[in-house]
Image 1 (tube, rainbow, N blue to C red):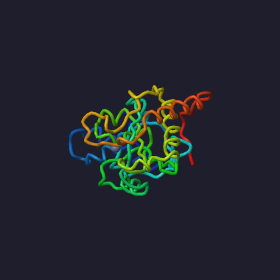
Image 2 (cartoon, rainbow, N blue to C red):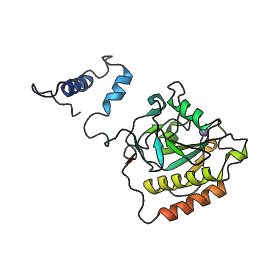
Image 3 (cartoon, rainbow, N blue to C red):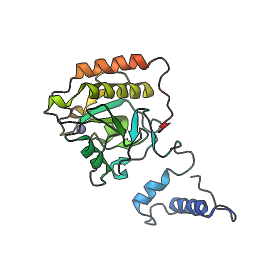
Image 4 (tube, rainbow, N blue to C red):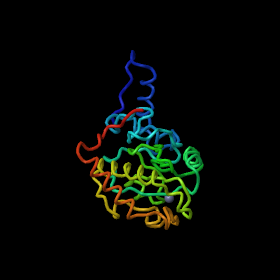
Length: 232
Ligand SMILES: [Zn+2]
């Protein structure tokens, strides 16, 4: 377990936390702490998680806005769950409405990234963590989800800037986790088993997108993406 006894002269706060964690271990099965309290504590145990930095992003061109933690689950990917898929979504709303929805604890869903029609990228959940975006637990655990600003029935929403920015992002993710650049591993939400969602819709140009991802992957190939997060 790794919980340590607080020493008399140790930091009081840390000592108390160690005691709480120890108490959780001792009282397993009893309702000493609420379930969500447990969920927040387990990852604090030594050796479980990678260091995290407030505001850090996994993609240098993204800006960070935190999603509500009700819309994702803390994990330690790719060590606990391997990542072998990128899932493409369309928001059915504006960029800002998607950001707001992902900040809303009642929304019960969020993707790692949102790409705007102007090519801007906001990251809202770390790739370490499991975002609730695919409507399928297994696919959520194995994938990175990317939303695109627009409506599935409006082809004009799918701009050049958006395709290009998204393709660079996807290429970087594929490089980071050694994901093959093909349609088995880069798929639409509609292709996730059990989903009732239709995005990214009939106007999403897969041939064009995959070509752009391949080109970006080749261009980025030389010194491949650093696995460490970039603080902004
Ligand atoms: Zn979707």
